[in-house]
Amino acid sequence: QVQLVEAGGGLVQPGGSLRLSCAASGFSLGDYAIGWFRQAPGKEREEISCISSGDDTFYEDSVKGRFTISRDNAKNTVYLQLNSLKPEDTAVYYCATPYLSWCSGHDKDDFGSWGQGTQVTVSS
Image 1: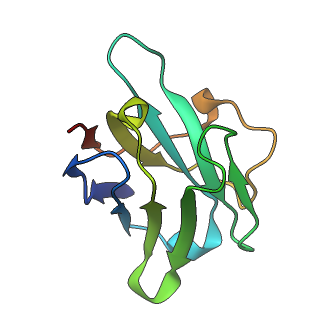
Image 2: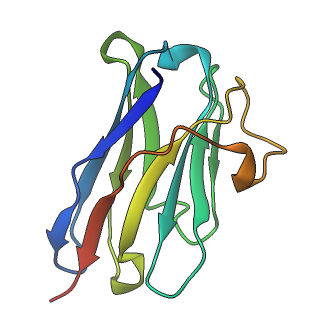
């Protein structure tokens, strides 16, 4: 059974950092693109980053330069490093896969195997 599990969220002050992880089971994560999404209260889920099987990366403009996506295929895990956090980054963060090796051209409805999400709260 294909499963993704997110972890690493928490409460952090503005300007702080967190590292989120997305651990896969039931499939070899290195063969697929993995996307990170977030959903703030009252807002739609949005894609913020993606990494292809070839390590090509995508970042949404609001997180570019602050967040970094990476993968460790030996651990079957994708990470999202969150730096210089802002209150508007507060959301539940999810990972998912489009079941393909590349990131471009996907709508969020193309993604599946959603995890349960991990809450990130940025507040002083």
